[in-house]
Length: 411
Image (tube, rainbow, N blue to C red; front, side, top):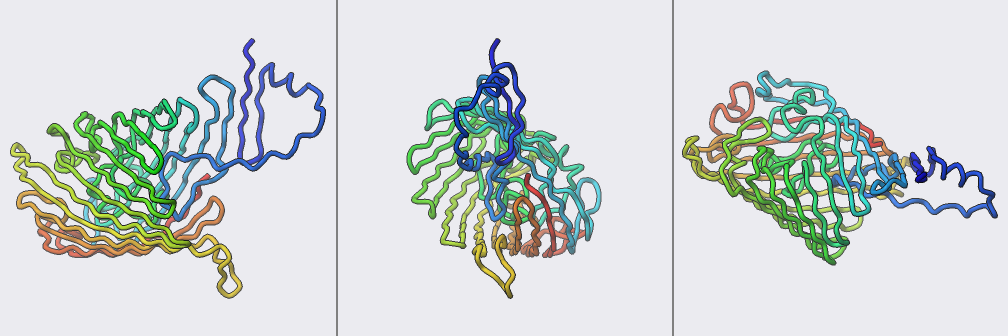
């Protein structure tokens, strides 16, 4: 009979489930007490984390001797948000509200990040609070976007430098991740609003020294039609300086249009240049973005473009800092500034053809172990708007101010 063993571990504590071979090991006499095991290194986490929030370093771990399974880690995120805003508009067939509370994440992440066969399965509920757009509640956002399994893929690590993965993949585009807890700010930004989020397709990855390359053939803005090629190139000068160029575009026209697939952006192209510099407690991330939507005569749409830039700055208070004898460890102060403009006489990519906007966001954050709380104030100002395309019930407002608070745990 083939022997097997299965252990469930959280941090240094493990519960063992065993077959015949495990029982024999337990019965064998020990010659001497073993030396204390070294503390395990934090496991890899496939979903990106911009910080300052950090993922649980000791997630639930399932260990097995079964072929190709090895160790599987399970992380989770449960977060909730309160929001106050002026100039609410309409969303999801109803009117947005001046004040609301909602679950922003209730997710489980099951992944294997070592060996030749790896995988990720993300299961649960989520929402996408974003600047300058009405908020769609989680109860509707899941069905309106990527379903209850928003990301899931199989990855083959064929050599130490080369891998292939396929499934529902996170985009290679942009400087912000999809879910609230992954980012410096609760809301995603104006530039993020132009980008795709999750692709169904195939991706190849190559790393060698400071260079990392990825290329993907996918369905763009979740159109369920293989019509896009995206790619990214990352050069790590040193741990404190990283440069990323990412780009993508469609190679055939697709007429799909729904809440997850914007018709114009799905038939276009985009380019990002992102630089990250860290200096002690400071992190600086400037990036620029250019997008172009192609002419669609059948839909009465001409060419449209956007050009924008953003600067993310985060100051993480040193662990030994105190104020009036009170420790400030776990406190961070992220700030984001953005500007984006659009062109095109027959298409609206912002707040009407030819409109532009800027934003300011401040999100003080405190994390204690696996728990966090953060507040946020944001301001968006739009110019050259078209009535009906901007803020408020009538779409004529030129600005929107929001105050938010989010609390959560990453287990």
